[in-house]
Amino acid sequence: MNNYNNEIPNWHDIARAEQRLPQDADAWLWLILAGRGFGKTRTGAESVMELVNSGKYKSIAIVGKSILEARDIMVEGISGLLATTVAKKMYRNSDEKIEDASVLKFTYYRSRNLIVWENGARAYLIGADNYERIRGYQFDLVWMDEFAKYRYPEATWRQILFAMRLGDDPKCIITTTPRPLKILKTMVESKYTYLTKGSTFQNKENLSEKFLKFIQETYGNTWIGRQELEGELLSEKENSVWKKADIRYQEVDRECLERVVIGVDPAVSSTENSDETGIIVAGLGYDEKIYVLDDLSGKYTAPEWAKTVCRACHDYGASCIVAETNNGGDLVNEMIKTIDPYAPYRQVRAIRGKIARAEPISLLYSNSRVFHTREFLELEEQMCNLAYDEKIEKSPDRVDALVWAILELKAKKETCNLSVLAA
Image 1 (cartoon, rainbow, N blue to C red):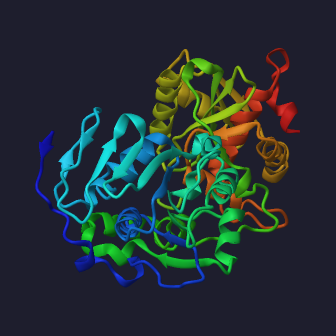
Image 2: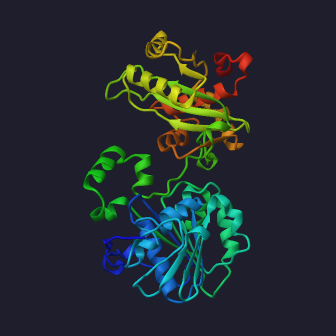
Image 3: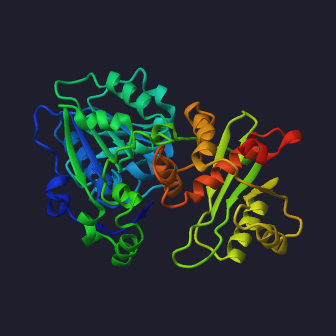
């Protein structure tokens, strides 16, 4: 056990008004929708400690996206429960007692995913990806972090509601960067919710100036910036081809993939105002599900995107590079073959419009046949902004690359003519 200096000042000396426990007697859900770096995790951890120290709450759930995130971020992280103690430690895998100088001492049983305070209060660490484990528990206090990232948010929330049946004043704290989920909108509209909204920039005194300048220049006034920095709960377009709720997340081991391909929608120029080159890596699992593995899209010169594609082909063991050549013609083939003469390359030409090509792919998403292995914010923004009956002002290059990759994976090997499939 290694000691390190207490560098985090007392919470009551630094907490902003919006980070303090609400006093609304009717609200049992405190929903904090805020941008990255707002201080959500620290707010959740300090609030849990304050409520436990009151002696009123004895059965607590600490719920993260996974059990690893519950441990690494909510408990052991720099803003987690252990960081709220005055005497901080570095923790190993073994169970260790906390010698804490605050109001209540507690013991963290890491191997059991359990915290026990000296007044008998117990906190159970739970991963939302295993939400059925919540059955059988009962709580008077719940803290859920980054709820919008959960793989099964509605199912997890349902289990939490059934479990919050102890005490005369049960409370739930949700700290999350928002996403346009139906369940979040329902929470916001509930009369039992106390809503706190905030942006990254409200905590600028504690954040890197270089970081703030970069993200403001890069994502200011964009869909991603409004969600990830300003903490806005954005509304979906009613006529969008993809719905945000249909984008689901699931990790996959490489050995579980039958085939990997790379979809490419190359830009025809490389000026400041040029379109991006869409580069999407996707794989077909032995479970017959399609997994989006990577989004390598960006503004490249022709040699740069060709090198990026060929490197990804090698890194992921892709069996095919499929590239749209409506504008690039033979240049696309020449660029790829110049970098790697043996690259497994197939060119395709778009015959139907972008929405007509995307529609059957969005249907696969709605039928839970396609999963993203992690959040791809720029790709997902393009997907949800592609709408029926709207003029496409900026080419959705990432979506185009995604469509070509998935069409290639779904095409039968012996009749894989993507020009016909796209017609």
